[in-house]
Amino acid sequence: MTEILIIGLQIRLAPNVGCAECGETAVAIGSGAGPDMPALYCTCCERHRGYLPKAVADFLLTAIEKFGRPTLPITVRHSQLVAPSGAVAIETFTTTL
Ligand SMILES: [Zn+2]
Image (tube, rainbow, N blue to C red; front, top):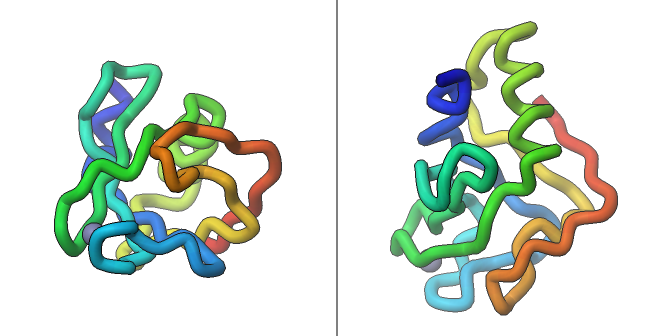
């Protein structure tokens, strides 16, 4: 149930991880492929942008429970969160709330 907290949350990918269709760097978390792998969609054209790794989803949930839901997109830097193929390949990341 707590996964619902992150649905619709926007993440901005930086630097230069734009949508292949429209170039938008912001993605929104959708309900996608089940509770362990929320899907990511382009906020501009709604193209599927990959999946949010459970570790990142858990981190976001923890942050929301502690600090509240952010009103601005969270920036994910130095991320391989969404590879051009849509595959998930995250190793290291930092976020700015
Ligand atoms: Zn797009």
